[in-house]
Structure formats: structure tokens, C-alpha cells
Length: 450
Image 1 (tube, rainbow, N blue to C red):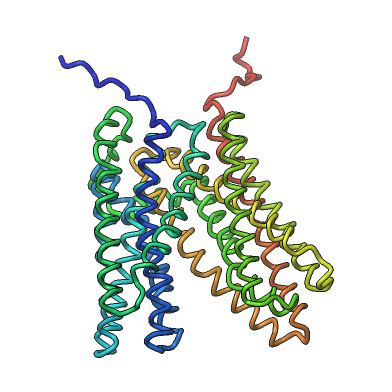
Image 2 (cartoon, rainbow, N blue to C red):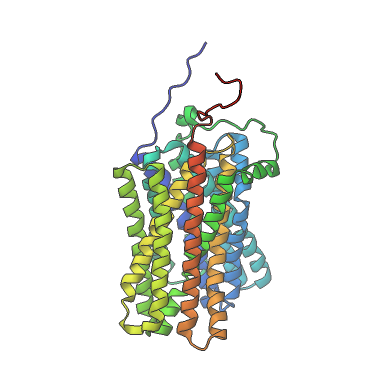
């Protein structure tokens, strides 16, 4: 009888960084498609801004399919093919988006059709690859390192944004659509190669710690999704992610206009203010990673950071509401930095909680569970920006003062974060209930008791 396979140790820091390279590759392609290509449509081709806006919305809308990709990995039992396949679809979508821009210059409607197909592929590729990457990390990373691992992969995605923007910007000048196609093709090919090297052998060495295949591999996706949605903890966590991500993203499109309208910031100054916020987000992520890693990332600490991050975000947004009435004497930059820190702390705690909770529930449903939460995140992120900007426009139309309008929107976002904190507490209670022993000692007062 063959000996059972030896249990491999969890991934070390080098292994975590290695898998983080997949996020870097994702970020490299996404930043070209959602930023550079969109700008070319509006500026160089002089197309209405609604066109790239709808394409980006399409990329977010297709995130609702994340549970389906997760179900595919559950049925197959392996994650690597889905990570590689998703990256391949993303790379083809990114290259197709660049081709569509070149085509629009001469054949507008065929170019738009190709762009729509390409952005659909981008959303599908990000969903499949990103969802299965998080499941793989949850299987291979020790519990105490999960917040730090979440920080690493998030920061490495941002690094993909920065490095690609700087490098591609150098090679795109002097601009031409031919250069855009060549640069995007090179970035897409390099991202695919990096992903292949990053995941090669990682899952094969983890055979002993793989999640078992689901008991009924023939179960349909609808059945699997219904089973996961019926789990109180998974359902509550999905609602928490959805509500909190709307609050998180709703501020993105109104912070700079708010600074310009109420505080008189120039475009350069408001851009620097956004940089202050992003710096705070990074600081909050690193803070949570360091504290939970060295203090011990127990389940309670992650829940504490998730709840605390939501409450602190609500307090900072309340401060922005007050600043609308105080005006130039208000310390806007420190408050915006604190908002970033709170947002970063919440984000890392939420991702770390995803990685910890994904294995709790019916076995063989990790992919569907992570996909459900990823869909909630992706759709909410897309909706949040639209809701924030739309609410700002409506408030300015109804209210006489722009300051009052912005204050109302910031207050609404603060309320959403407080609701999110309550949902996080509810998730914590559900998790605690699952961790209690199934059978508790009881006193028997029946007549037959001796």
C-alpha cells in the first residue's frame, strides 16, 4: 500500500510574493485598458467620454460571473488552469482593446463592436484569474500570514499599475495607434509569461493540502450557488462586501471635484490630494499586515480591523462633511490621509477574512464562495463610482449650496460604512457560532434522570 503524500509546509514569503506576481500581471494589463486606451478614445480620437465609460462599466458588470468561474475550479479540483486560462483571456482582451482603438479611426462601428467584446474578455479574465488566485492563496498561506499576504498581492497589483504606466508611457511617445497596439501586445505577452512562471509547480506541490473535490461533481452551478447562498455566514459576508465596497468606491469620483469646488484647489493640487489619500490606503494596509503578523493574526484580530476600519472610515467621512461648512481653515489633507488609512485597514482585513472564511461551509464550494464575494466586490466597485457621482449631481441640483450637497453625499457614505461595521459584527458572530462545539453539556431534568 503506497504511503500517503507528505504534507507540505505553507508558502513562505518568497512563495507569497511569487503568487503576487499574478496580481502584478493583472494590474499591468488592466491599467492600459481602463486608463490609457480610454484616454486615447476621448483625446486622440475625440470620441464622447460616455463610450469608454460604458466599456469600463461592462468590464465591471461581467464580474457577476465570478461564482461561475469558481464553480468550474471546484468541479475540476485544480486552480492553476483557471488562473492561466483567465490570464490568457485577459491578455487577448487587452490586445483586442488596443486593436479596436486603431480600427475605430477608420471603421467606427466595427471598432466599437471589437472594443465591447474585448472589454467583456477583460472582465471575464480578471474574474477567473483573480478569484482562483485568492482561493489558491487561501489554501497555501498560513492563517497568521493571510493579512500580510493580502497586503502583498494588493500592493503588487498597484506596482503593476505604476511600472506599466511609466514604462508604457515612455514607449508610446511619439504616439500612434500602431505603437499602442505594439506596446499593449508586448505587455500582454509579458503578463502571460510572468503568470506562467509564477504559478508553475505551486499547486502540484500542494497535493496534500488541496481542498477535496466536491462530493457531487455533477451538481449544477445553480445548485452549488444556492447551497453557498443558503449558508448564513457566506451570505452575510457577501452583503458586507457589497455595502462596504459601495461606500469605499463612491468617494473616488467626487473627492477631487469637492476639493476644487469647496476649497478652490487647482487640478494639480486636487491630484496631489488624491495622492495623499492613496498614500494613506497603502499605509493602512501595511499597518494591518505588520500588526497582525507580529501580534498573531487570530480570527478576532481580523474582525476587529474590519469593524474598526469601517467605523474609522465613517468618522473620517463625517469630518469631510463638516469641512464643507468650515472651508479653507479645515485641515483637509490630514483628514483625507486618515480616510485613506482607514480604507486601507478595512480593505486588507476584508481580503484576509475572505481567505480565512472561504474554507468554512460545505466542502468543495471554495471557488463558488470566493466567486460570490468577488462578484459582490466587483459589481459594487463599479456601482459605487456611478452612485457617488450621480448622488453628487442630484444633490447639487436639489440643494442651493454645493458645499451642502457634498456634505450630504459624504454623510450618506459614512452611514453606509456604519452599516458595514454592523454587518461585519454579524459575520463575526456567525463565525464564532460555527467555531463553538457542536454538542454542549446540558442538565437533564427529565423524570428518568438519576
